[in-house]
Image (cartoon, rainbow, N blue to C red; front, side):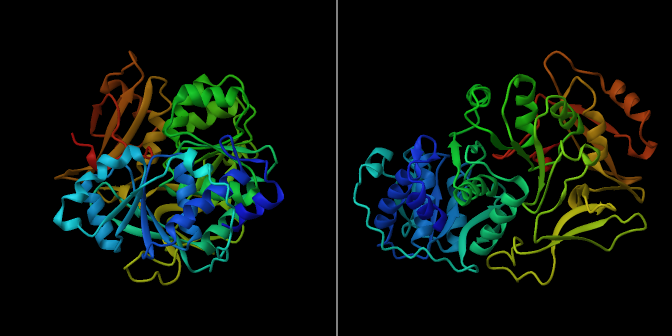
Length: 461
């Protein structure tokens, strides 16, 4: 947080967020923080789509040392109330656009203690010329800066605390691996209520560089920003980059940070041909440049400085559960038992002789068929090599004989569908018989959440 004040003091006229300078954002954050000071609450929630105003409210709430619960905008009202109740949050700051999502709070007996406060307009915030800074800019490493709930659209969630020590360790390590230039301008289309979006903001403030925030992903607008060289860094999920890559003809991109789900090899190869600077990332702890290490393209990279990755209970091939240790790893979920020792990512993989980490699959997605392990990612990577395939996923389905068998769900590019028997014949040339899907179902699109991750549990035959 102190990085914002430092920027306002040392490079006040440098762009910070969109067209606004470090001095503009600093003044705006001070204005909002003064208004938040009277709140008698240790935690507040924020509900908003990406915007400059949202970024200032997040930073201002942090400045007055509130723990900031970042609510997923796709939640239903009952889900919001459930999350607020379980975390003891009684104040929700929100954008004008999200007012209706909270309007029932006024009438609900279950939520009569909830206070909703609408964001001021950006113009009003920035019209405050009084710059009195008497705030405490010192943050204890163990204090919680933000809270993000996992599996938020299911009703069953865990609350992940993001502490200041984790943030500091991450931004420092990221700068060491990704580097920085004064011209850096990081595009934010991933939601600020997600760790990927918040990390962009924090990295940029630490580096003293710029962020361009879009309210949501807009392919035309993103292409314009890329081709005009207004931005040179992006964080994306593979789904978005798959749609975007064919249309990129000119760029000055320095970094494309790619994570959030498994990355099809066909996408990596297409990006390599255009010299698109893909940096794979995993769990905010492992990163590497594909262009720098093309022979390691199937890995997710090496641990960031200060992080350690180990394989727990490996088999004879060195494959086991991936565990993390280091200053970026959380110590436990809120209201749950602290994590004792390493953090289990629930991913299955291995580490090669050069220290590069490889992920075979999520533990929960592993298919055990007749005692044989089937890794859906292996099948998905193969299917993605078919030019007509737009997206695909392999999930387990119950089977009386084998326990589980793989089922393939696939969506095709317009007018390029393939019959299931052709797909299966293709796969048979490359895979053992027990790995071949027993079912193939074509869909117009795969179900995804707000950050682009495939919702595997919603896929039914």
